Amino acid sequence: MMIQAVANNIVSRCILGRKAEDENGPGKFGELSRRMLVLLTAFSFGDVFPCLAWLDVVTGLFGRINATFKAMDSLFDQVIEEHRISQSNDVDHDQSADRKDFVHILLQLQKDGMLEIDLTQNDMKAILLVISRTHLKKI
Figure 1 (cartoon, rainbow, N blue to C red):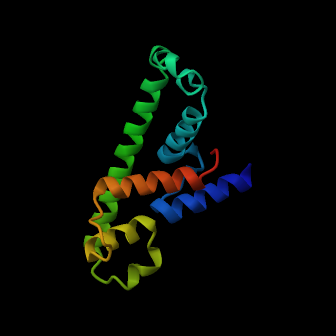
Figure 2 (figure 1 turned 45 degrees about the vertical axis):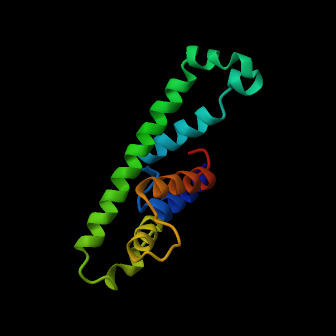
């Protein structure tokens, strides 16, 4: 369990620049990741019997999923904004090069226009969601 928590914190720091867990238990990102994982693996009537998908609304599954994803979306907005502010405040970019995480790299790609497409805020949040969901184990 402890090795898993350390691994999750390492992955979270590489992606977002913050821990998934702290000494007092899961942080906001760790808690949202846990909720998201639980909800995405929960039984859904609509997955098994498509004609009974309306039961997922009645049981509140869709509501809980929407609330969790809105909270995760808000957290990603906050993290991206914090990274934007820290990048604009860093006068000496070489000194902060050793502290870069994946969000910094995405913002740099967006700023430099090195991609063939425009990288929007929603694109970055989708990438962060996929990567965090893929790499974080049950916290």
